[in-house]
Length: 147
Image (tube, rainbow, N blue to C red):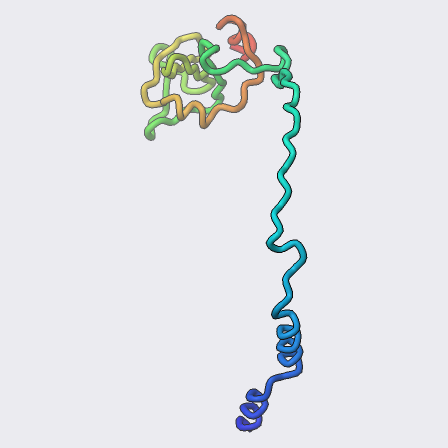
């Protein structure tokens, strides 16, 4: 049985014969346009420069234009396996987390503020969402967030 398979394998099949014939026919042919130099591209006139920025009412201030940012944090805040609590009143939930000048501050519902050294700006950026509003004063922002 195996000798029949080997005998068939020695003879080229029909597809191989057709490929060899086609290869022999195309051996000395060159595709059209091969070796011809491409034409030089024409230089277009420069486009008119326009203002491609957003209108002022749609622009978002950059980080260096803001005094700080804040976000609400309703649930208890765990840092290094400890629950953060207000040093003055003992509140442990419903925080406002403030990020200003590279420092992080926690503000409880009663208005007490304490600096939190276990949180850095990178942590704040990871956990904060996009800003939904900007405010001119700190008090306006507190009213906006319900404090």
